[in-house]
Length: 276
Image 1: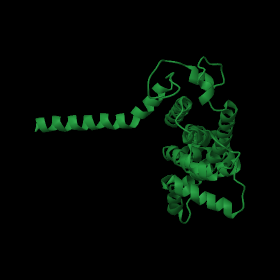
Image 2: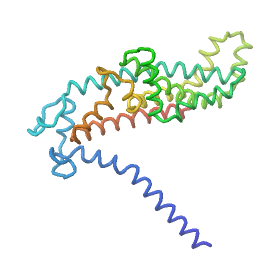
Image 3: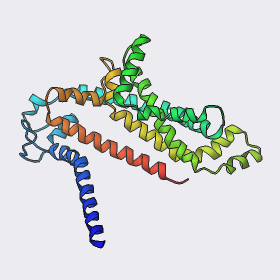
Image 4: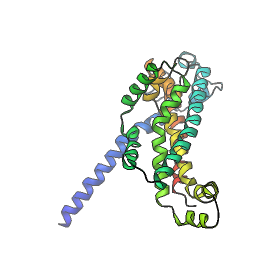
């Protein structure tokens, strides 16, 4: 029996190692080859260089071959600006509406409450391509011009659900008697919310907001369907570069986005798990 148990543990360990290698090895390769100085074939390692990062950030470089491969830095900065504008605006709307919905479903009882709670999970479980096509049909049917506004509305439709779930989890562990004590001491609903409820759910609100921000920054599929001609975001910019060939700058931009995503996601996890 002991030998069978050890064999099972080894198989499980091997499976876990293979799974994580399959999941993270491509990401590690992207980071490694972002420092490769070979401008022709990025899979052939030549030498270590930071010139690809300098070129993406608009600094002078030492590689003369960059002039043949580098994309317009101005277009890249416009894409970053559009992504940040969409992400910030979407985060504000999603956080406010998601938090309000979580509070309403947590504190009030009404008909079809369970159905409404289940309805909040649908945008998360729906395939991105289906949601993107549905939003495109919706905007075209209403005659809306595709642009940053349609991207913001589209992102908000499913990011509200993410904020709702994070804040709801925080509300589930909240002591309701504190609100009752606040009411007994003469505080109205607004004062109770501002002085009692909000400080306790603030880590969840911040965590949900950061999660919504990073998902909005990284979204490609839904944005592809509802973006206009002059509303290219950073994921769309990278996708456009890949359609014209795998260039060394793609590894660099992807590595910078990965670093940014890790920082924001880590902050979200920290605030979500933080106690009052």
